[in-house]
Image (tube, rainbow, N blue to C red; front, side, top):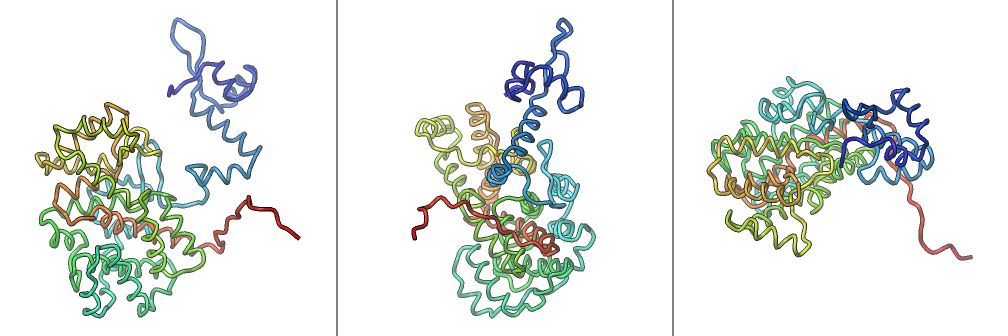
Length: 398
């Protein structure tokens, strides 16, 4: 789609005459520029025109604005945690890609929870909530269900979790993250960083990649699981329950569970030599190309770009990375789509030979930070999130 519109196109989109269009320009509501040196005609920035159309629709039908807001629409809630702008992701003003390459997961947690990168050592010095070791050994489940059971058990004795002050939630959050890492790695204690703990159990010398992957997943504004977490915290559910609510939502195949579909897509392709054929077959069947195209990032998901670039620095010759590169190039050539973070996480899982489902596990560990950040914000509000439903059923009888 063109960035600019002609005067006729702009007027048609706005439903106004040219005189009104010129008035909008003079008031600074729409930017314009001369088409060329040989012409005096001006063209008008489509982004500004669309924003003006949106504002007019909001005034005309406020109910529709609320309805549309539930589908990638206008912002519903205020938050100081995450900004998505100019195809970049920021946590409290810091570029997430930079944080992923320069900070620890624990420091980013402290940043999101307390707006303080230096608070991590004190937060994460706490011990893991104690669980009956025989119970934990008996949990022969994949990582996420095992975490859900452990959180349920730990919440029954961690009474400090009912301190819903920002510092109290941050301390509980640190205990929760360490507990999750302990369950995932079957380690009774977590004496080093979470990334180092995972690397020791999964893939030695890959701590920096695991750390970056989790940071890049730490928050993503008001996505489905974060909205769920805010609803839970709005009624003052404790942080364990907030994380449980987030985990339940994250596993859906249209959210973090999508990583499983990406992994299946990669297995279906199998070899670099089959990339074009396999993708062509999918397109012919009308199947989705899992792991491509994010509504908020028309120029490519910066999280995926960062993680893939880091993988290329250390695993450029890996068959998994070579396959991922070939798939990404073929999909872009055919559809113009770019890889998402789900695609990058699945590539990381394959390249490092991590346990099955580790892409989702890393996603969950990172996003737990964001859920609790949103909880801290929501606990500070006296408002309950309680939207109304428009009844469309059978009319009432006598």
